[in-house]
Length: 157
Image (cartoon, rainbow, N blue to C red; front, side, top):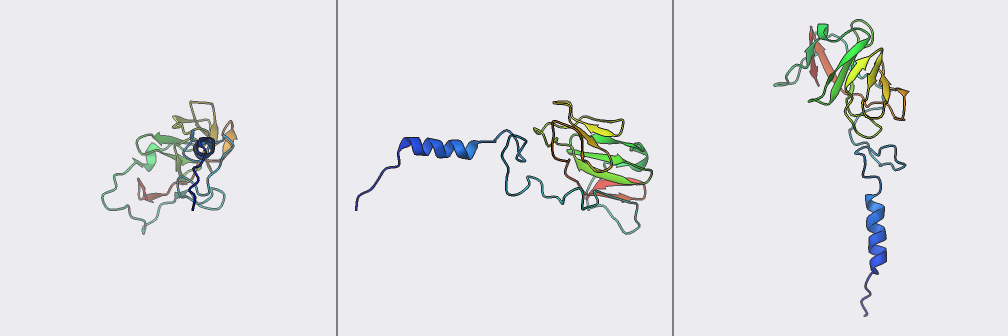
């Protein structure tokens, strides 16, 4: 048997193909995609991103509360950068949570104003009601996150 060496050009081409699109954890908007999302979550259009107050909902043992319900403005929200989550209250008593990582290029959103969650890097805006894109360059909604609202306390699920 004769052993055959792989030409260096082939190896370099394969390495380049594997590293294409490394600018984003979630497939980014650079024309590449992954077979599974970086953060497991259901599509925003088919799942409830938040929670409503419930007597049976209890926070995970040891989970620190994010905020009280009175700290989240109606029609707005609050960004929790350390936890990488944004909690919104689209209408009174309805709480939603989304990833605080912009789907454009992975920047952390920094504020909620005028009904949108805003990214400071390239100007993407997402709706507080469902995380959908209100203004690009992002083309994908913010992934939903799970929260528990128990009495007046909001905790990550």
